[in-house]
Image (tube, rainbow, N blue to C red; front, side):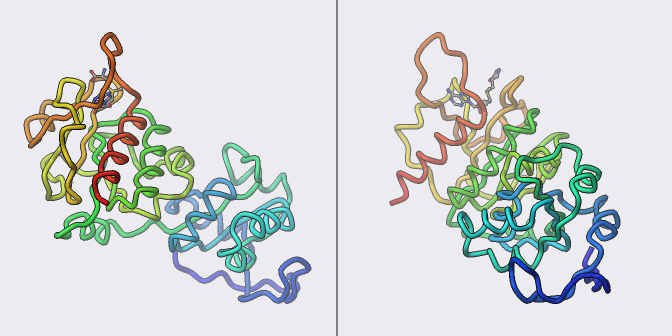
Length: 270
Ligand SMILES: C[S@@+](CC[C@H](N)C(=O)[O-])C[C@H]1O[C@@H](n2cnc3c(N)ncnc32)[C@H](O)[C@@H]1O
């Protein structure tokens, strides 16, 4: 994963769009094929932008239109523009289409090194903690998981833990999370191994969340889209909390429930 990409003879040392290249580059397609099975796919400009902003190690990045990608960077991400200029290799569209399963409208894709699980577990276990951890108990929908990771990153949550079989680093989750997996600690754990901290489980049958200030070290747990909280998680919860909802509405979407709860925490922490 960490092999430097060596310079081919055919690429110019000065790039027409970005000026002098900051480091030698190699054959991006060969590098891609070597890394793809173990790396994290960053699909689209915004996913790459966020990943780079939050410190991802990106060994290879491609686009079918380097000038267009760097124009986007000038416009939307001047803070990482030089880094993106250094990373992005232009490849023919047919080549790009062989590298990704679903072409992205921005025609940008990259591979990142997956952060170390040990480092994430240390982050999740560290106390005292100044921001909550979100737990998704056996989530089923990849898009929901991505949206939750994006929310957690936006609110500066310490991490997102999933239980069950869904892989929180699945490419569809990373795409849904817009590359913000690199801004928080995302790992899968068993319910018995949840991080320390008071466990607040969200359930329509719980006490009204508005009567309570959520502590900064809260572990905020949400149930599966299909069946809600598991018996195991429910039995470990210190508090069961509900979000306001008028009668006859059964429940909210998982990601919107996380959004409301994180907002409630943030509103009480100032
Ligand atoms: C789509 S809901 C699950 C619906 C599921 N059929 C059930 O039986 O609970 C997914 C999760 O969002 C959270 N949630 C949804 N609406 C909520 C509400 N009004 N109050 C608290 N949590 C809620 C809960 O954690 C719930 O397990």
